Image 1 (cartoon, helix red, strand yellow):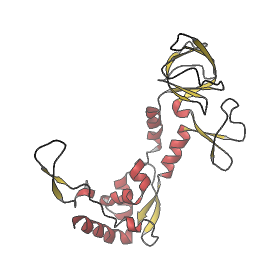
Image 2 (tube, rainbow, N blue to C red; image 1 turned 135 degrees about the vertical axis):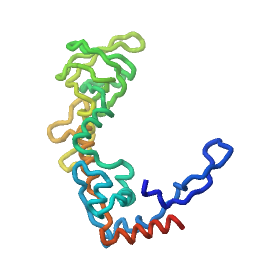
Image 3 (tube, one colour; image 1 turned 180 degrees about the vertical axis):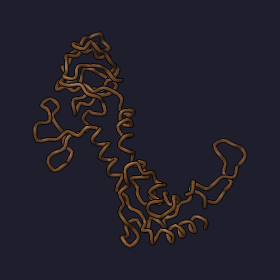
Length: 242
């Protein structure tokens, strides 16, 4: 990786190994680029085009693929969350990390339908294991893609004491399309009464919405001006080598 080319070697002992080996000192850090993070003299704002990789953006801005690493140094969100995904890859990614089924209810279920219990749909006859509960939103997350009735149904479960329990579902959705939170007219996240529902004045934000918005926000990045890139990169490398 081009970024590490100027990192010097040191003797390093891994774990319980007896002998040290020659290895690059990856712990080094220089704040040369950090010092210009908020300086308008050195920076531009750039929108990453759909599907562009870091090296391609570097070519687009600087005529070389080797300055891609400056994007991560300048932008904390990129460093922490990664490069924005193309839209055609985003939904498969969300489905992969949120592969389960969510049952929504207005029933109070603090003392029943516990994690680990098996839930059965009275209309669909489908069953699944409860893996998470959200009392604040009235949600039960069921392991896997379970074919419950989308419009809701009466659910039953038997607890650890052998007692049968019931719960009325108002809807069933894929986990990635389930509610993450609600916002008011100003966009502020607000709590709801899960037994009463959110009401008409609040807007639902699904996990799909949240991931899409975060992914879009990652496209807006700070970049070093082409006129300044060579001098800043040179200073950075000198700092690392020293």
